[in-house]
Amino acid sequence: MLPVVPNPVLILGGGLMGLAIAHALARQGEAVLVLSRRRSEAAGFVAAGMLAPHAEGLSGPLLALGQASLALIPSWVERIEADSGLPCGLCSSGIVVPFASVAERDAYPTALFGEELGRASLEREVPGIGPRWPVGLLFRQDGQLDNRRCLMRALEAACVNRGVAFEEGSDVVDLLTSASGSHGLEGVRVRRADGGLHTLPCSRAVLACGAWTAQLLPELPVFPVKGQMLSLQGPRHALERVLFGPGTYLVPRGDGLVVVGATSEREAGFQEGLTPEGQLQLEQGLTSLLPQAQSWPPMERWWGFRPCTPDEGPLVGECAIPGLWVATGHHRNGVLLAAITATLIAGALTQRQLDLDGSNWLKAFHPDRFANRMSV
Ligand SMILES: Cc1cc2nc3c(=O)[nH]c(=O)nc-3n(C[C@H](O)[C@H](O)[C@H](O)COP(=O)(O)OP(=O)(O)OC[C@H]3O[C@@H](n4cnc5c(N)ncnc54)[C@H](O)[C@@H]3O)c2cc1C
Image (cartoon, rainbow, N blue to C red; front, side):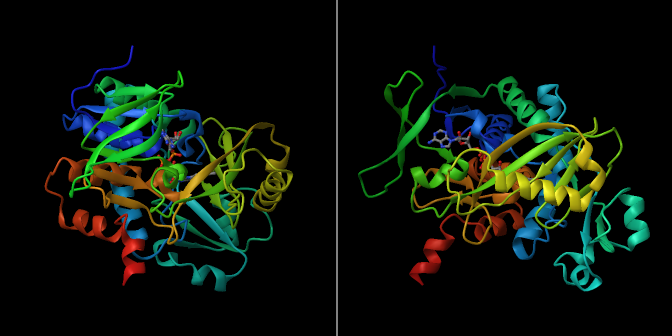
């Protein structure tokens, strides 16, 4: 029996953004229906969960957006945990970025926000760090969420407890717009799990299909960037800080699990699966960053697709089809940016007063910004 929800906001895609936005809308009293094709393919289950606007070396408006989202995360997590009764795995572990030289460290775009570490203090922060790293930066303000084991499940439970309806196994295959002058959104066509095609009328929807967004709306320049990951079981407390090296990072969870990521493969498209080259890259990075971790027992290996855009910034706002909102393209920073994205979309869609920064961000990350550039 499918859920009957009166005039709901449809969320197209039940990944990280879809769930975060559904939860925020439900908290504002909106009826919400999430159309979810395959939860397990969501990058929300793949990510390392770093909250790392500084360690990632972001700059410009993306850094400001990341910093603003970082500030929202504790209260966002509190709301999810209160509504779900489940932990999200938020940890203010800080992130250490090691460098091969002082010059490299000083040139890092976010160097001003970090604490400088020499070799002795690097060894204190990361016992056993490899010998090739003489200096580093410590970003105490950056941290992590345990997205794979905690956040995604907590978000889903919070949505259910707030009355969000779900259609699992529903593939959105088409967006239906009015044939009249307004070209507004009139509905979506879905292929349900039983193979049948159905039309769901709606006047408001949020497109949150992650790396697959352009399959529904080819005007949006979103493409997949594949990432491969692995995890190891280390001794508890062997690594306390996230260690973010070039090309490889290590993210320690509280129980000793260490998530090792990630390849960044633009040319792979949607090619599924692990590759020997990708796994070798991670193992070499691991050896260089923390040699002792080579002997820690392996746990899992997995992969997924980041939704990327030409400027690597997200697409957030109402697109050229009135009634169709877009929340995608978060690339490497979707876990970090979920809190602010949900706040911006839910606020704007329900026409709540956004503060000045909110309006500016909706301009800076407008989904049509590439189309506008081309037509200038
Ligand atoms: C290897 C890797 C490491 C990462 N590490 C980090 C990190 O440390 N920190 C960080 O902040 N971010 C990280 N990210 C990025 C983050 O995971 C993504 O930016 C974020 O998950 C994007 O969320 P999303 O909801 O847009 O997409 P997803 O989470 O991928 O969800 C999209 C969902 O839409 C569904 N869907 C697609 N098409 C349709 C359709 N037609 N109909 C119905 N449903 C559909 C899919 O099934 C999927 O479930 C990482 C990503 C990867 C891949």
